[in-house]
Amino acid sequence: MPEREALKLEAVTAGYGERTAIRNVDLSVQAGEVVGLVGPNGSGKTTVVRVASRTLPPRSGRVLVDGRDPYSLPARHAARSVAVVPQEFAPAFSFTVLEVILMGRSPYLSPWGGSSARDYRRAREATETLRVQHLADRPVEELSGGEKQRVVLAQALAQDAPVLLLDEPTTHLDMGHVVGILNVVRDLAVAGEKAVLAIFHDLNLASAYCDRLVALNSGEVVAEGPPEAIRTPRHGGCTPRIPTASPLSPRSRRAATT
Ligand code: ADP
Ligand code: MG
Image 1 (tube, rainbow, N blue to C red):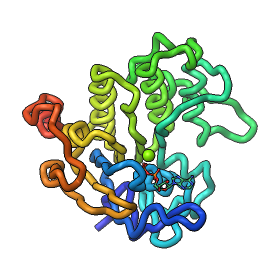
Image 2: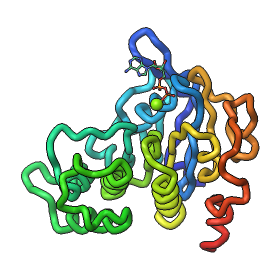
Image 3: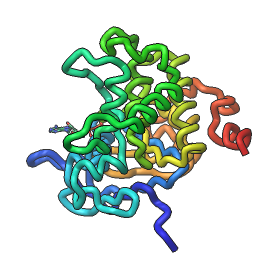
Image 4: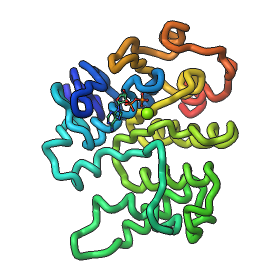
């Protein structure tokens, strides 16, 4: 049987200098699935994203993206398989929205050519999906937090990678924007067949949007399964703020689209 997992970590241990940040982590995400990575601050969530995005090689264990080890591929090739939305986005220069989104096409640029017609088309399509087309010519630093977040997601989408990694994609957003972004993310997974691994600070939000959760504590996976199996106080549960019968529930959304 062919490998179904778009992203797989097998017994991955990784860290910084002397410090081990994650230990023996097993994790997989299939195409069409949104997996939430939850856990307290410092539990290793961002480290998992770094390892999976080819920025921090594991000390032991292995990573597979689309069935291949990204550390065995040139960076440009690996970037065609995995796109990352980092927690903080702070461009060093004043770029327009369209320029920022076009940067998502850099894994496809030829060394001597500029952006192709296809690159522009994919970038434009991403602006439409994230509903930022009216902002295309605006400098990104002028945008609100919610607009900026949509632009960064559009950049990742333009990258055309089957695996999407999101590091706390909703941190600085108000609830209306949170719902908007997460609905887009779910649609990307369900309609776009992407494998999404998203870090969440808020367990309720993670439960409402994810098919499965992986809970980390002190760098180790302490629980894994459907949200209802994870939502116990032991794993950092908090008072629900989203009703369980919410229309945001992935299952009801999925049922509505099939
Ligand atoms: P989380 O995203 O869950 O808050 P991180 O993966 O960022 O956790 O951090 C896990 C551990 O690794 C923490 O103890 C943190 O202090 C440490 N750490 C993270 N980044 C670095 C770094 N660049 N250098 C050294 N230690 C780091
Ligand atoms: Mg983090």
